[in-house]
Image (cartoon, rainbow over all chains, first blue to last red; front, side):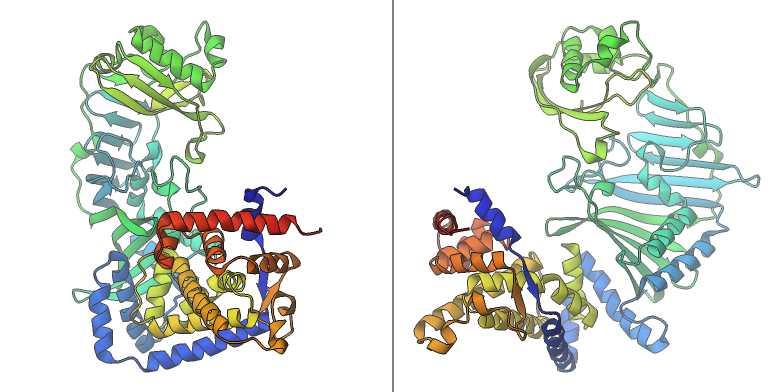
Length: 418
Length: 179
């Protein structure tokens, strides 16, 4: 007997093809009807549509497309369905325009959590302000800073530090590039590289959906470039829509049509039938003097610094742990307030008192089956372990502990989810 | 999908390319849906053609609130139901009666079915229309029971029950075939 699932599969997979000749004939007829319908359109109807359409942010772009058509027909440079080649021309012009920019100061806002990492997004999170600076001195030395309320990322020319307020830090004795530590938005400061990257992608992927529209905003000509990105992340993946890179999204660049300088940037994430504005550059300033103090940081005396897990005398015991065993051992150590043991799962110089107060004496209610996500696979070394604990305060917390063992000691350390 | 929203907007702005893209994207899905819902291939073809033509006519005022595929599938389902009702009201001539799945692959036909699809179509034709519609729209068009209930103007439980009984009957019909 066929089980019901087989019948469903059969229905789903039943193939029909359509006759190519008839396809063309039908399409020809439909396009003729489309033309007839276009010619019958009255001017008042256009105005009415325009008013309706402006209510949606995405739709505003489509309104821009109307203006684009009008402009395009008169100057006869681009047609209304602007090709990747034209988008390429625009990007090339924009790249040239920013090639002699020596400082950038950007203000932005992003739907994220103030104290979480720089890339986390949430469709229903409130906007959090971001501020970013970059300058190149006369000797070619680059400095930059990316800041949100709970974190600062600073590269002063020699070293890179991530300061997590109030007193946790990660120090790298090297000049890391913008975008390090998941500071996705920092890449925006590299306007030249950013646009160059889009140019490469546009050139290498002729099928990539790139739309270019020409619009007038408050009397100034703007060029708007939309880049549509569809990701290969399953709908039910845990990290889907938690990072821009794990979501279907559209990037909207706006350039001044004359100077070709990037003036604004937005990212909309598509979720279900909604398009949610996730990130928006609100202000860009080029070639302005930036105070030296921006590229220096003062740290509290009792700073806790992150450090790579060291190989332990009994390292083998920890190396052999499954994700579930590691999570259980970590929480048990917290329950017993055995902070030396906890430290073996914590990539830092010591355990902060506030963390001790938070996790000390907890009670484990359950540890679930570990799972992986494509966005956190880390070559198979990153896992999420569902857990439920009762804190000493009585609060019950149910979440997923992120643990990873892509470190020289080859043992799991806690990476998030506390 | 975001792409569909933009396509609809571009269509409204007169983009033939967008219209072509919508046609290419959903044509075969809609043909499959129509031919699964109706016994007569030529009626199924007419319905899909009419749905696209109607989309063009109403496109100026059309605002996409859900999925475009869902909208077009609902249009096909509504027209298929009307066609099914109309067909019951007139007597089919003997010369027309054979134009079911077995005659779908004539050279002038739009729809070309695989053998498996034809066998399935014959089995589907044995189901009462409401059950067939529920099964097809749920499995092939991905419509939820809530949406189906609204379309058929019945309680959700009725839609679920139609689906369950329809699948069971279909299973029984397919199992009784000599393979």
